[in-house]
Amino acid sequence: MKPLKIAAVLISFIMVMGFAGCNGEETASGEESKAADATEAVASDNSGAAESKAQESSSSLKFVAKGKEIAIDMDTSSFISDLGDPVSYFEAESCAFQGLDKVYTYSDFVIRTYPDGDRDLVSSVELKSDLVNTAEGAYIGMTEDDIRGLYSSYNIDGDGNSSMTIVDGGTKLSFIFKDGTVESITYTAAE
Image (cartoon, rainbow, N blue to C red):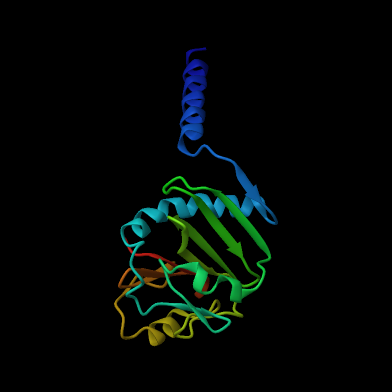
């Protein structure tokens, strides 16, 4: 009986802490649960982005979509309307900042933002298919050797068995591998 009481108290504590973390209304369309999970994952990445949010990216690591450069901590007003309507859109009260975190899901990539006053700044970009690539030419499906060749002028961390990262300026470019090929490419703020 005692283990059940301890478990009940622990579950109650976890629920109370969960409600205390982010309390606000949410508005969503499209893939709500996937976008909600993505926003929660970005909240942990926002701590690094917060330190450099007022700066333009000093990194050469940028994503290009429809002819528009997209960089970490970049104001979305300079490109978001040019990308067209996303497949789905999600927004929720930010846990880390005053305002709304937003998730724009397009067919081949996802852009997550965080609020900075009346601006929305890029917190991450995730490539979802091999139909888009990094500015240097990396795309989903490439091998470790392909990535090392494209980024030979950068310091690369990781062994390519499961992941590799490249940090330049305030940007971290992460590659996740599965069965020897790139499965995921994500831009986030460097820690």
